[in-house]
Structures are given as C-alpha cells and as structure tokens.
Length: 284
Length: 305
Image 1 (cartoon, rainbow over the protein chains, first blue to last red):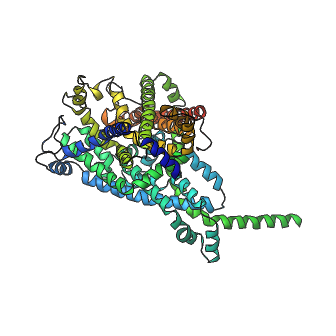
Image 2: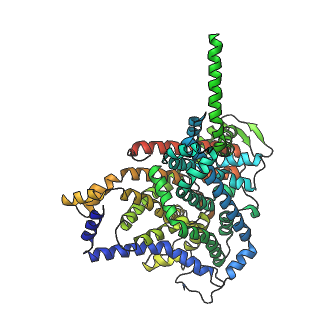
C-alpha cells in the first residue's frame, strides 16, 4: 500500500503546472463555500445595513454588535436558542442510549418477535419522513401534544438507523466477553453497560454527532408541531425571521447565531461526522 | 396420559422460552413505543383520514375514494408534480457531476487536502434557515446585489432570480447544490478510496494515463457508489421543501410549488387534512416506485447494501 502510494506520488510530483491548476480550481471552489459565510459574519457586524451590496468591505467600520442586540430584543431568538439546545441535547442523549439498548438486544437477544420487529424497523427506515408529516401532525394534535417538548423530542428519542448501526457494532464483539461476564455473575444490563457498551463508544459518538446535527438543523417537522413563537427551535424561528423581511444586518446576525453552534460541533467532531457519512453511505 | 405429558412438556418449553424472552423486552420497549406513537399510528391514520373530509375542527365526513379521484383533475397538483420532476432532473445530474469532480480533485496526496475537504463540507452543516437567510440576500434582484454584481463583472445584465417565474426553480437548484455537494463528495471519496492503487498501477503499465485512467478504472469501479448516490439524492430531491417554503413560498405564480409544498398547502393553509393525507399516500407511493425502478435499473454492486 505504502509502496504504491509513493509511486503514484512520484509520478505526479514533477508536474508543477498541473498541480498549480488543481490548487487554483480547489481555491475557487473554496471561495464559493467560505465566501458567503465571511460576508454573513461581516454584514452581521456592520451598523445600519439594509441591503448587502457589492463591492463590499469585508471588515466593517465600526464593528458593532447592534444587529445581535436588535435580534435578541425584537425576536424570541434567546428562547429559540434555549429550545434548540434543550431539544437537541435530550434528543441526542435519548436517541443514542435507546439505540444502544435496542442494538444490544437485536445483536445478542433471542426473544419472541425479534425478527418481526426487526423487519418492521427496516420498513420504517425506507419511509420518507416528509410523507408522514401530515398524519403525524393529525395524531399529535388529537393527543393535544402540539406546542410541547414531547412532540419536538419524541420522534428523536429512538433511531432506527442508530439501532442498526449499533447492532452491527455489538455483533463485531466476540461472544467470549458475554460468556466471561455471565460466569462472573453479570446480568444482561450489567453485561451491556459495563462490558459491551464501552467497546462501542466510538460508534455511539458517531451516532451522537449525526443525531445532534440532524436535530439542530431539522425544519419541517418542528415547524409543523409548533405554532407558538416561544416553543420554536432556532432553525424554525430563524425561518420566520428570513420570511419577515427585516434589514440585512438583522438577517445575518440571525444566520451567525444559527450557524455558530453547528460550526463548533463540526470543528470538534469532524472526524465522527465524516465517519458517520461513510458508514451510512457505504453500508446503506 | 401421553397427551397430558406432551402438553406439559410444551407448556414447560413455553415457560422456558418466555423466561428467556422477557428480560430482553425492556431493552427495546422505548424504541417500540416511539415507533408506535410516531410511525405506526400516523401510518394508519394516514389511510383513515384519506377517506375523510376534515379540517380537524368541525367538519368530518366520509367521502370514500373521492380524494383519489379528485387528484386526476387537480391542476395545482399536476403543476406541483411537474415542478418536482423539473427540480429533480436539473438537480441530480449537476449534483453527481459536481460532487464527483470535486471528490476526484481532493482525492490526491497533495498538501492541504484535508482542509479543502472540510471547507467544502461547511455548507452542509448549515440549517435551511441559515441557508435561506444568506441566499435571500445574495440573490437580491438589485443591480448591486452580490450575485448580480458578480455576473455583471463578465457582462451579464442583472437578473431577478427568486422572483422570476423562470429563474426561481433553477435558483433553488443552485442553492441546494451549494448545500449538498460536500456531503456527496464524502461518499464519493469513500468509494474512490476503496479502489486499490494496484489497479491504477496495472493500468499505467498498460499505457493508460490521465483521462483514460479515470475512464477505464475509476468510473467502472465507482458504479455501485454512483447508484447509491443517485438513489438517495433522488429521494432527497423529491422531498425538497424548506428552502422553497422560506425563500419563495411556492411562487412566483406556483413556479416552485413542489409536491411536498402542495401537501403542506392543502393541510395547513386550506385545512384539508383528508385530502392532504390522500396526497401523502400518493407521494409515498411515488417515492417508493421511483426508488425501486432506480435501484433495479442502476443495479447496485453486491458490496453495496
């Protein structure tokens, strides 16, 4: 492997012109992805800006936080931020833990209905969730659960994809561990928590990051199940800001507020995100 | 006597099976409850409500299969289906080409590739609300708006973008591409890196290089990855909603009303929850059929799925 890698490198190394062209192309693509975010940040820190007009000064004079103050004063942005953090954290912890439990049961258990339940779960996995939004709303409104955290968190409290992912992870652990634990007198819960789960922590971390990002960025479902402003998540709330036609400074302050948390998670957990996509991509 | 013995044996076996099964149910009970409440019950209620005319408040009457008959004459629905097809047909080829091109570009042992990959992935971590906040401003119809200024540099006159009947949908396609190409780049990269270097070396020995190397090694071996990407990207494209909801509200003049947006409209703007449920069934069947045809026609390799 390393031999062939060095050989392909030695073929490409002398070609300086080609390399330069590649770097120029890559830089051009990079400008299109980073540029809008830089302008977003710059405009959010600019005083009294109604429209984004080009050419633009990337470093505004003076730099001001007025747009953020206006955002927090005029909208429920702080409340939306709290809702989003609360909903995303509970959803992520709950979803990962229940996936870990169910994944363990499907990997190790031998119980009635196991295969039937497993097939049912597979069936849900292929269902497009937007097709189910209207009936979900109908059921939730009949149960009086519209505008509640239960509605926002509920569907995220279990993950079929996560259950499959963790089932695979548990299946890759040799049975010897279970046998040894049983001999030492561990019951199923102790075997799961103390013996097997520590070995699938990387998979659980991957799932956690994917779930957190997915929940934070979800829009359609949380918009449907909340009608009161103070129950909205940040993503849904910012959607109303975008539709309300305020000035550019306010809009970009909102965009920065919505973007920063996901950026922080991405920077810290990038490895897990890429791993998760590769897992879901290659394994289906 | 013998009968009693065997039934006793059966019942003791039953007890044994029960005893070995019971401890496992607590592990799946939460999953099962969430599944029943948020999937199974809505699934059944979708069928039940599809034959009712109801606004969830006062009206509630049985209409049989009227809703399904009505779909044939629903011009707005037909327009929405055409729009959804139009979006998907523009989006998928561009997405496949762009994300593969970028993946091949960054799949080299050059310095700084990891940083470039991370930067390309950035748009994908943003929510649709952030996306809409930014692009509503960038696609401003003003002559000095960001995109109009940039195309002005190469002599193209200012465009109306999202508020133009013909440009609105292509604009949404562009925004969706910007958001998604980094994600699919990662999947392509996983596929590219699964190709053994020995194959390239062998092809080089046989005299292939540059484009021919890609034509005869990369592309054939990426077929399963391509099939996977096309299927999941299509399922995603058929469900496009958020950016349209925020940016155009289905307009101008229904130019961006997709099927999902129309379902939303029927339910939440007109209060026709019965008809919206029937449309949801239609939509679900549509996606299922398209995905099945695609996976059959594109033939996944054995190593995928």
